[in-house]
Length: 119
Image 1 (cartoon, helix red, strand yellow):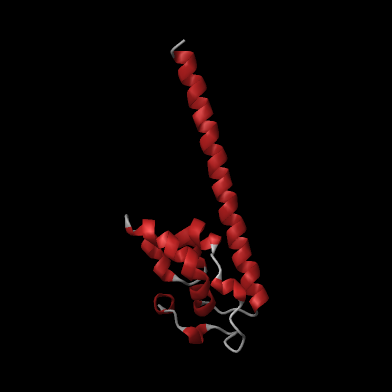
Image 2 (spheres, helix red, strand yellow):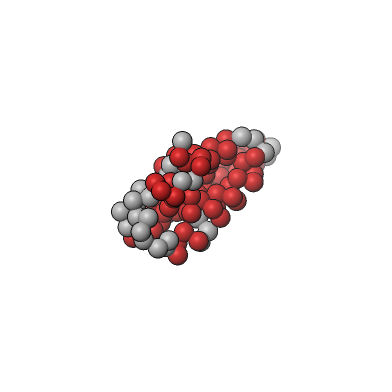
């Protein structure tokens, strides 16, 4: 359960300086929350499954999870870390855009359906 305690000694790259990406907002953690946490061995992200707590946790994850991921998972290099976090961000943004498009299509379909029913 190292992910809960954020142990710094778990990182294979402990001799490397903490990359600048660790101190930036993490869109992957914000958008993917608990799924991102499981993939990055940051199990505190499972608090996103608790109602009401999740409203706060997604912002905590966005701000702190890059640091937690750097500490909790073994990384070969800073490049691997930034590349992996970039993939999480791209996937999260892709899902967000996909959901937004689906929502617009559902709203349009409902509007057309209700318009035909009431005419």
